[in-house]
Length: 137
Image 1 (tube, rainbow, N blue to C red):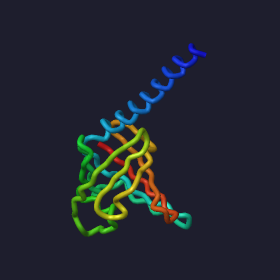
Image 2 (tube, rainbow, N blue to C red):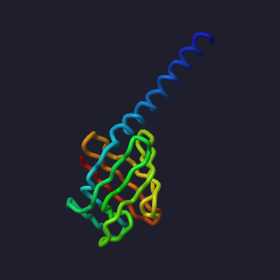
Image 3 (spheres, rainbow, N blue to C red):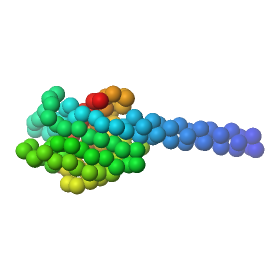
Image 4 (tube, rainbow, N blue to C red):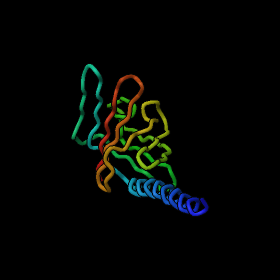
Protein backbone atom coordinates (compact mmCIF):
# COMPACT_ATOMS: atom_id res chain seq x y z
CA UNK A 1 0.00 0.00 0.00
CA UNK A 2 2.83 2.40 0.81
CA UNK A 3 4.39 1.87 -2.64
CA UNK A 4 1.12 2.68 -4.42
CA UNK A 5 0.63 6.04 -2.67
CA UNK A 6 3.88 7.68 -3.96
CA UNK A 7 3.18 6.42 -7.48
CA UNK A 8 -0.37 7.77 -7.35
CA UNK A 9 0.89 11.11 -5.99
CA UNK A 10 3.49 11.39 -8.74
CA UNK A 11 0.89 10.61 -11.42
CA UNK A 12 -1.49 13.24 -10.01
CA UNK A 13 1.24 15.90 -9.99
CA UNK A 14 2.22 15.12 -13.58
CA UNK A 15 -1.40 15.23 -14.71
CA UNK A 16 -2.02 18.60 -13.06
CA UNK A 17 1.20 20.09 -14.39
CA UNK A 18 0.18 19.02 -17.91
CA UNK A 19 -3.06 21.02 -17.61
CA UNK A 20 -1.17 24.06 -16.35
CA UNK A 21 1.28 23.91 -19.26
CA UNK A 22 -1.56 23.70 -21.82
CA UNK A 23 -3.15 26.75 -20.20
CA UNK A 24 0.18 28.61 -20.31
CA UNK A 25 0.73 27.61 -23.92
CA UNK A 26 -2.61 29.06 -25.02
CA UNK A 27 -2.00 32.20 -22.97
CA UNK A 28 1.40 32.78 -24.60
CA UNK A 29 0.02 31.96 -28.03
CA UNK A 30 -2.79 34.52 -27.72
CA UNK A 31 -0.59 37.45 -26.76
CA UNK A 32 -0.32 40.05 -29.46
CA UNK A 33 -2.63 41.37 -32.16
CA UNK A 34 -4.93 39.18 -34.25
CA UNK A 35 -7.04 40.11 -37.27
CA UNK A 36 -10.68 39.02 -37.13
CA UNK A 37 -11.07 37.28 -40.50
CA UNK A 38 -14.39 35.50 -40.08
CA UNK A 39 -17.48 35.89 -37.94
CA UNK A 40 -20.55 33.69 -38.29
CA UNK A 41 -23.84 33.12 -36.51
CA UNK A 42 -25.68 29.82 -36.76
CA UNK A 43 -29.33 29.56 -35.76
CA UNK A 44 -31.63 26.52 -35.91
CA UNK A 45 -33.66 28.21 -38.63
CA UNK A 46 -30.91 29.94 -40.61
CA UNK A 47 -27.18 30.34 -40.94
CA UNK A 48 -25.62 33.77 -41.28
CA UNK A 49 -21.99 33.57 -42.19
CA UNK A 50 -19.91 36.66 -42.62
CA UNK A 51 -16.42 36.46 -44.04
CA UNK A 52 -13.76 35.97 -44.98
CA UNK A 53 -13.51 39.72 -45.40
CA UNK A 54 -11.65 42.75 -44.24
CA UNK A 55 -13.09 45.32 -41.92
CA UNK A 56 -13.94 43.09 -38.97
CA UNK A 57 -11.16 44.77 -37.03
CA UNK A 58 -8.50 43.37 -34.79
CA UNK A 59 -8.19 42.11 -31.26
CA UNK A 60 -5.12 42.48 -29.03
CA UNK A 61 -4.28 40.36 -26.00
CA UNK A 62 -1.78 41.78 -23.51
CA UNK A 63 0.38 39.74 -21.14
CA UNK A 64 -1.26 41.32 -18.06
CA UNK A 65 -4.73 39.92 -18.92
CA UNK A 66 -6.07 43.06 -20.57
CA UNK A 67 -6.76 43.73 -24.21
CA UNK A 68 -8.63 45.73 -26.80
CA UNK A 69 -10.75 45.10 -29.87
CA UNK A 70 -10.30 47.81 -32.50
CA UNK A 71 -13.07 48.56 -34.99
CA UNK A 72 -14.67 45.26 -34.04
CA UNK A 73 -18.30 46.22 -34.53
CA UNK A 74 -19.29 42.54 -34.61
CA UNK A 75 -19.18 42.52 -30.82
CA UNK A 76 -21.93 45.09 -30.35
CA UNK A 77 -23.89 44.64 -33.59
CA UNK A 78 -23.18 48.22 -34.67
CA UNK A 79 -21.74 48.27 -38.17
CA UNK A 80 -21.31 51.99 -38.68
CA UNK A 81 -19.31 52.84 -35.56
CA UNK A 82 -15.56 52.47 -35.31
CA UNK A 83 -14.84 51.78 -31.68
CA UNK A 84 -12.27 50.35 -29.36
CA UNK A 85 -13.46 47.96 -26.66
CA UNK A 86 -11.22 47.39 -23.69
CA UNK A 87 -11.54 44.08 -21.91
CA UNK A 88 -9.93 41.66 -19.53
CA UNK A 89 -9.27 38.08 -20.49
CA UNK A 90 -8.37 34.76 -18.95
CA UNK A 91 -8.09 31.23 -20.25
CA UNK A 92 -7.93 27.55 -19.47
CA UNK A 93 -6.45 24.98 -21.84
CA UNK A 94 -9.42 25.31 -24.27
CA UNK A 95 -11.59 28.23 -23.13
CA UNK A 96 -11.01 31.99 -23.44
CA UNK A 97 -13.14 34.27 -21.28
CA UNK A 98 -13.54 37.90 -22.39
CA UNK A 99 -15.06 40.44 -20.01
CA UNK A 100 -15.71 43.98 -21.14
CA UNK A 101 -18.19 46.56 -22.31
CA UNK A 102 -21.39 45.22 -23.83
CA UNK A 103 -23.30 42.02 -23.28
CA UNK A 104 -22.46 40.44 -26.64
CA UNK A 105 -18.75 41.08 -26.10
CA UNK A 106 -18.46 39.49 -22.66
CA UNK A 107 -18.61 35.74 -23.06
CA UNK A 108 -16.70 32.50 -22.89
CA UNK A 109 -15.32 31.11 -26.12
CA UNK A 110 -14.41 27.46 -26.73
CA UNK A 111 -11.14 27.18 -28.64
CA UNK A 112 -11.72 24.79 -31.55
CA UNK A 113 -8.45 25.44 -33.41
CA UNK A 114 -5.38 26.57 -31.48
CA UNK A 115 -2.42 27.32 -33.72
CA UNK A 116 0.15 30.09 -33.36
CA UNK A 117 -1.11 31.94 -36.45
CA UNK A 118 -4.72 30.74 -36.62
CA UNK A 119 -7.49 30.49 -34.00
CA UNK A 120 -11.12 29.36 -34.36
CA UNK A 121 -13.46 29.93 -31.42
CA UNK A 122 -17.13 29.08 -30.86
CA UNK A 123 -19.59 30.42 -28.33
CA UNK A 124 -23.31 30.60 -27.67
CA UNK A 125 -25.40 33.42 -26.31
CA UNK A 126 -28.00 31.19 -24.68
CA UNK A 127 -30.67 31.91 -27.30
CA UNK A 128 -29.99 29.02 -29.69
CA UNK A 129 -27.27 30.90 -31.57
CA UNK A 130 -23.73 29.64 -32.07
CA UNK A 131 -21.11 32.30 -32.84
CA UNK A 132 -17.92 31.41 -34.70
CA UNK A 133 -14.91 33.70 -34.59
CA UNK A 134 -11.78 33.17 -36.68
CA UNK A 135 -8.55 35.01 -35.91
CA UNK A 136 -5.33 35.16 -37.94
CA UNK A 137 -2.01 36.88 -37.42
